[in-house]
Image 1 (cartoon, rainbow, N blue to C red):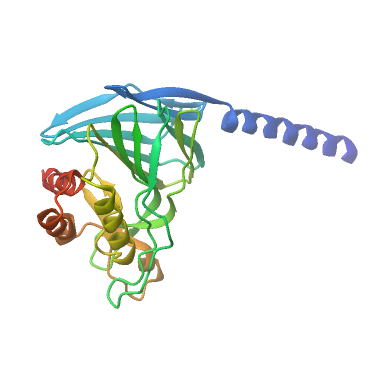
Image 2: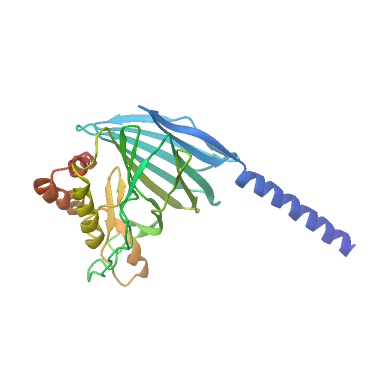
Length: 294
């Protein structure tokens, strides 16, 4: 009898494992953005379904929200915000929120990058000196610039975080993972990640018809400056503004706490650089700061 029960348990376990594997690793791909030759898709578990898009328009932003369900259960939202600035630059913000209890394996894919010319914004390690107020900021520069078929892109990194309470009663994002390392293969840039339960994913992409800098020399100077001055480059962009390092306190979670600070959103570094070395990138960051206030 005991032997039969063990065999039955083993069979049940094996069948459960097969079902779990099918549910988690059988994938499909769905287009989430296709404008002016720029195509982006999401690759996700087959049983993870994106609901009908609900779109709202406000000032510079068109925001599309899709409910996510997993085998019929609500597990969060996917939000894409397309921000169109007056200088012609478009910024795409992606946010996924996993409200469920199952980790999700997802890839965001940028297609059509034929014969791309890439320039890393992380050519060397970050100089990360701890600040007495804010501690260390371990985030990296954005992935870098990409030129393909006459279109210019600036690709941000992936940020996975969870919400933590703050001593003043507010909330912050605790950084769990940053991924600045992507590869372009067969004309596709794939940003893959595991999104744990009760976590957020943020990433962003700038799109322009002209280079972000007047010269490669100016771009190199900015890259070096940003790597050496961690509180000047704004890395973690969201529609509401950049998430930046918050002051630390006795709570160890504040070592990696990020939130919104109005003075940083105004981006004084871009303002200063745009006066001495004008560039589409600095102009875009300043226009983005204004749009974030609306």
